[in-house]
Structure formats: structure tokens, C-alpha cells
Image (tube, rainbow, N blue to C red; front, side):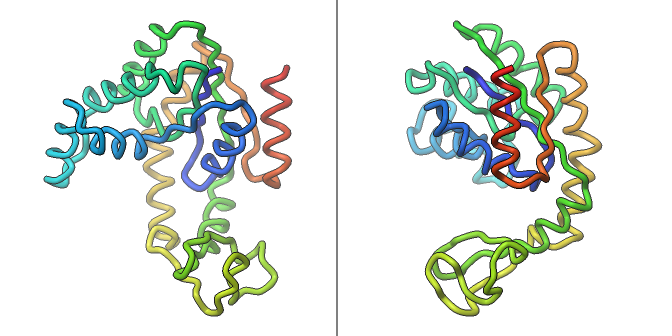
Length: 214
């Protein structure tokens, strides 16, 4: 089973990817993980990535595609994977299409988590990180607004710059103008599973599983 998890920033892709990875015993792969692993292993592509990122530049699509191919074809992913955060552009989607066409035993699911922009903004502006243990919480979902539910530290929550409304609105605008086009690219190529990502976490899980089963 190969899953491409798609959706706007803040829609809950990471949460659902973690659950699906445990459920189906397959790896959750993000582009960030791929880059870090390549640099750590000091592969030929990894050394190129290190050189590029050290200059503060973005990794070109062709190099990123090479890293993704290495990862997807590795022994640890032979039973499947969940790809989160890629592709983000039409060019990346075309490169990924070629990579996936070479996979043996293809069973691809394209899962699109849908969410209203205002709901995402409301969700992310209420997100906080515990400065002591790193736990991420949503203030709307905890009873004690000034106490970490994990380590019980008081007044330890901080708000990341990424969770400021202006930053979130900008990221959503980029997604709408660039990344959302990827959905149309796949529209007639794969069976797209669409699930409301703003439901309760458990409901989203159940709806994804039901759609895969059907």
C-alpha cells in the first residue's frame, strides 16, 4: 500500500499519517525526513543537499526527486509508505508520477484532507508548544490553559511565529495558488479519497479507513 497524503497546512496530515503508519505497518515519510536522512548518510545526493542548504537555497526538484526515489525504493519501504508533503507543484507531481510508475506491486491511495481556511486559521492560532517538554497542544482542547498536560509545567506555553495569523494566511495563499493545482493533476489519474479534515481526529481516522476499505 502506497499513500499520498494531501491537504493544506494545518489540516492534520501529520496526525493522520502517524495513525495510518501504525495501522498498516508502513513508514511515514516527509520531505524533511528524507533530506535529513540523506545528509546524515552522506550519500552522493545527500552531500549535494548539504551544500545547497548550507547556502540557504531550496533543493531543486530533480535532486529532491532523486532522493525520494532512493527512499521509496529502499528495502524498509518495500511493503508501502505514506508520503506526506510531496508533491507540492505540478512539476514535482510529474516527477513523482514517473517514480511511482516504476514501483512493483503498486496499490496507490491519494487521500485529500479537506478543510475550510478559516477553520485552519482558528486551529493554528490556538496552537501552543510547551517550552519544557516540546508537547504541542491546542488551547481549545485542554482544560487548563496555562498547564502542559504532558509534563504539568505551568506557564510554559509559547506561540511559534508560524502560528501567527498573517503567516498562516500567507501559507494558505501559497497552497491555494500553487499546491492545490496538484489535486487537479491527479484528478483523472488516481482514485482520490476526500475526507473532511476538520472533523474530530477519531472521526477523520474512521472516515479514511472506511474509504480505503470501500
